[in-house]
Image 1: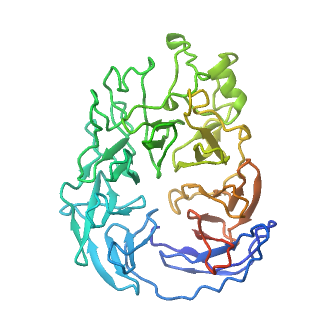
Image 2: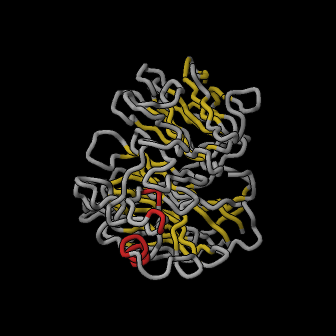
Image 3: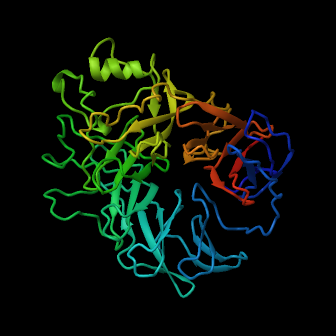
Length: 488
C-alpha cells in the first residue's frame, strides 16, 4: 500500500458462530505494514484453544510503496527461511529482518517501475536454483537466488507489449501447464486496444510458450489472426478482450485432459478459460449467439457477458427471447479486479471456477454488491461447461460498498480474492473473501452465507487483504489471518 496514514488495527479474537462487531480501539500510524486480525474457526467436535496475542518483533521501514504484492516466506532452496518483499525494488531479508539482497528498479535496471501483483517464487526449470519472478510495468522479470544475491536469469526480462502499446502487467501466476517438469509464467495486462493482447505465457527461460505440433501461435491472446486455433473469427464474431486491471488470472484443471487451464477475468464483463494451447474453451451448447449475424452459433467462455440473474442469461443466451438485457435495468458481473480460482466445490472430483465479482447496475454504472459465481468446467461432452453449479443459481452477495466520499484512488479497494478451504472440518470447502462493505464473508459449498464479520473498527473506509488460513496454535482448529487498511 502507499505510504500514508493507514488505520492499523489491534489484533482481536472472536468466535465465528455469530455476527459480532469488533470493539477494540485502534490508532493511526504512518506505516505500510499492517497488523493482523486473527479469527478462530470452530470445527465439528473440536474446541478452539486460545491463540496467543501477537508479539511485535520488528518493523522494517523505508521499503518503498507496496501495492498488492504480499510478502513471501521461502528458504529459496537454502534450508534457511527468508522474507521476500516486492515493492518497486525487490528485497530479500533473513529471518531476523536483516537485508540480504536488493534488485533495484529504474529505467537502467531489468524492471522499471512498481510491482502491482504478487510475485512467484519457485525453481522454474528444476535446476535447484530458485527464482523470484515479478511483473513490473510492461515487463516480467526473473531473478535467480545465487550466493545470497539476486541475479537476473538468462532470457529475462520478457515483454508484455502488443499492438504498439506497453500497458501495465497486473496479474501473474505460475504452473507446469503441460506436465513436462518446468513451470510456465502467465501474465495479464491492462491492454485495451482492439488488436492488443492481455494474456501472455512464458517458458522458464523467458521465451513465449509454444506447445509442440501447433499450426498456429499459441500466445499471447487474444490475437487477430483467422482460422483454426486463432481468435479473429472463432465462432463467427471472434474473441475480444479488454483490460485485466487487478490480479485477473488463475490456473487449474477444468476438463478431462491432463493439462492445466488458464482462467482470466476481463473488464468487459467476461470471464474466459484458455487451454494451454491458447484456444478458448467452448461453453455448453445451452449458450448460443443471439445476434442476427451469428444466430445459433456456439459460444466459448469469453464470448458473452455474465449477468447476475440466471433468468436473464436463460432468456438471452438460450431462449433468445424478450428484451436484450442492459445495465440500466439488469445487474451484470464486472470482473475488473476479480482474481479467479479453481477448486472442487461440491466434492464430485471435478473442478469449478470460483470468482467474486462486483455487480453493477444503472447508468452511470454503480456497484450494488459483490457476489460469488461458481461455474462448472468442461467434463465429458462439455454440456455443463460455463453453467452455474447446481445450487449456485442465486449468487450469495455482500452489502452495498462503503461510501468513498470524495476519495479518488487512495486507499485503493482490495481485489476480492477468494480463499477456498475447509475451515469447519466437514470435508467441504468454504469460500472466504473481503468485500467492500466493511465485512469479510464466509460462504458454504452450497451457496449459503455462514457468517460475516465487521472489520471497520469504526473507520469510514476499511478494506482487507486476501484471507490466509493456518492452525497457529496447533489445536486442529484453523485461524483466519488478514490485514486491514483504510481511512478515517
